[in-house]
Length: 184
Length: 170
Image 1: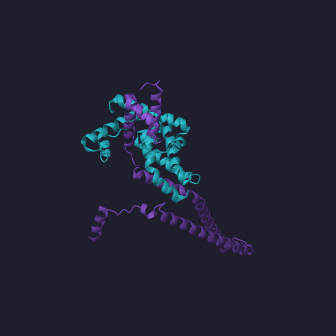
Image 2: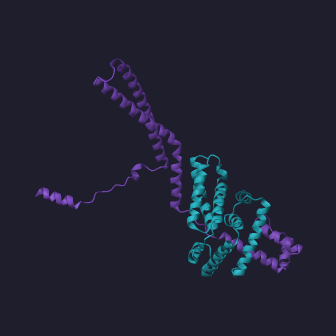
């Protein structure tokens, strides 16, 4: 192929367009290819290159690698739920604190260390607060449970039991000896 | 894209993303890291990515991750064994001669691809190996259509020269 030849340059452009699937080779170029050995070789060899490239094997993604993606994305999907979970924990801590305060006040009253007149009001307020906190925390726990069940059903996370190793205790020779001793 | 859309896109495009990363990086562990990272990033950006453009988005993300890695290190070659390549091509080749020729051409083209710059290799892989349309490739590698075609034509002719030099083509 003569690089300076207009016919060869046109043939070269046509061959690439043909390889790109954009156009068929025009008749004028076909005629040129019939007479130009180097342009014909270009067409044939570029065709071989294309076929070799298309026959390259595609390595699929290993199943374990995809599992890791599911694990990472399901863990990420738990993030939006974390404020809710945090709120649930906060309510539980508050509930525990309220119950503790109630018990403490009751204890102080029994020992006569707290002023009796203030105790009735304080106890009533603390009891109301404790009931409110407990009902809110119960609601938060229910919502967290529903969200967790939903995620398990969607397959985003596995049930916790699947991750709990169950180890059957092996026989302890000392215990066996002890057992024998007891019998003796 | 919602959660179900992400899962569909991940299952549909994971192998292409992984294959492209492996062909560009020539390292299985790195290809696995890149394809996982691209999928996790799709998850993180799922609200901004449409299901119709998920493939281009994933391949572009994988492409950029690969280019970053290539720039950070010298590419380690991990060429598949000849027997493995021949086995993979077994269903396409006819007879022992065909198998041998296909295996030789395959190994030859792998070696020739390694000789290309990563920019040219990316264009050849996306167009000839993965068959993506030009506009999608242009968006992935971030060049105008004319530049892309010129790069592909140049890369094809370079590959042809390398295979002729290696005696793979007649």
